[in-house]
Length: 226
Image 1 (cartoon, rainbow, N blue to C red):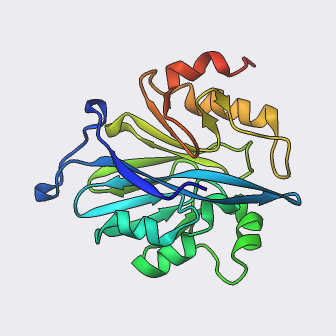
Image 2: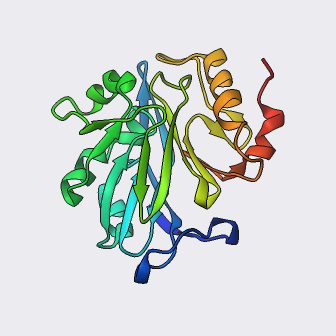
């Protein structure tokens, strides 16, 4: 497995609101390595962990595998929340340890509680994600969109001021995320993408749970029509 690595994502299209002396809101990526297990199978995976915020406070999206690597990337900033786009173990494995280290609450859609409890039987999430919910970090609004299909509780996070959306495993470079395993459904994920993601501006940058970024415009041809 590859070692964790991190770095800022600061393209001009992602300049965001300023927070006093803390600098502009920006997106940082940490790649961590581990395993994904479901339905009796286990796979080696590399995950994108996203850190959104400024020099003072951040929100962490999908605390995967390695709490120490994520904590190092946070670099002493206040963590306002650890947000889980869905409950698969490769996206939540480090969430409890990161929450303990930072004092931040863990947020997850309740439809994925069964998946969460398989990985963390002794700790519940601290709060529920819900469709239409608004979060805030460093003055930037983060909009929660429920996008079931990859799992029943899958959500994406849209940050209009950054022109970005964090899609977990719902949408990738190349099209919809995987289905065919427990708690997933292909027609449902395709409908979620058509109704919730392809309605965003074409230039919206899609930050995915694995692999490279893409855009809404680039993925439009890869999503079947209704």
